[in-house]
Image 1 (cartoon, rainbow, N blue to C red):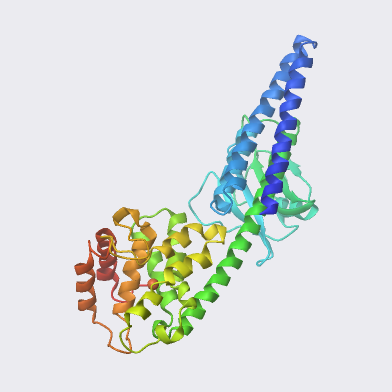
Image 2 (image 1 turned 30 degrees about the vertical axis):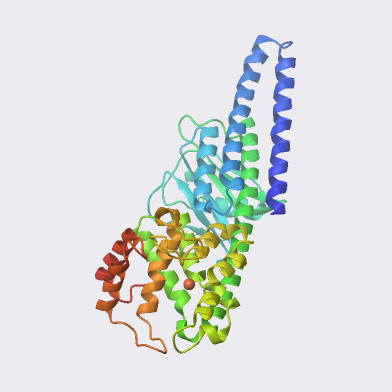
Length: 402
Ligand SMILES: [Fe+2]
């Protein structure tokens, strides 16, 4: 995370520089005229405002990279920009390499409808600001043929590129309204500082996303390797993952936590990669010794996932997916709410999958029998609330809900 750390350092430096400038200015202001003083106070107030916004954006974006979406961060940037410029309308468009166009990621006021405006470089005012990497300001958009919005707006419009080392990654568009601050004076300079901070964070979010996708693809490959090693649980991981997604939604979990649960369901048996294939595929009951060996898989899974920082909560869920609600499970004998909720969800999904799949020593249990088994285990092996949520979806969507 060298990039994130250096951005945080650069930001800290910028903040201390501003603080120094502010103190110095207050000292020197004592010797200026009353008229100049009032103008300076306004300017420094604006700077104070900008600093507050920058630190909020920094907290939103840099400190929580990976947890904040580009859409949410875009909204925060727009709110800060509009507060700075006293305007009420604007949008952020980011470059999408796959589509070869600029796409709106955030807009205010929110319409609630999906954004359908895509601009090629050079197209419209925003497309031109992007391709030329220059801010474009127009007094009267309605009389400018480059202005492509379906609505006719007579208010001044500004399109500012979001630059990373002089290379545009998107644009910030703002519409002035009745009492908007003039776009051309020092406000626009402050806006430029805000836009450059936003650009860095958008860039970091993208890097983080790529890194996350890379790690995830890597562990998914591992999970599939486990599935192919264990003949009887083929495609088990993918199935478990899609059920977990559905169940997390039904339990109204926070989206970030829900994503961890989905990953935990996908990766819960990844530790089986360290278990002897002869034990995994043994047609029949395991001996006590073999069972002890098999019981190591949550711990091995945890060891595989724990070094991947963003999978930290997933590693915990994997470690405890074989715990029992009444404390009789393994490896730690955790009880009730002490077991991570994600592990309790995975436990139910895993048991359902095991019961409804064929095994070499028995045929799959029928739907009714599997439901009865889950109900029987609610409160002992399983969290009753998770069982209830699972069975509710099962009743609504049937055996193969995915
Ligand atoms: Fe397991």
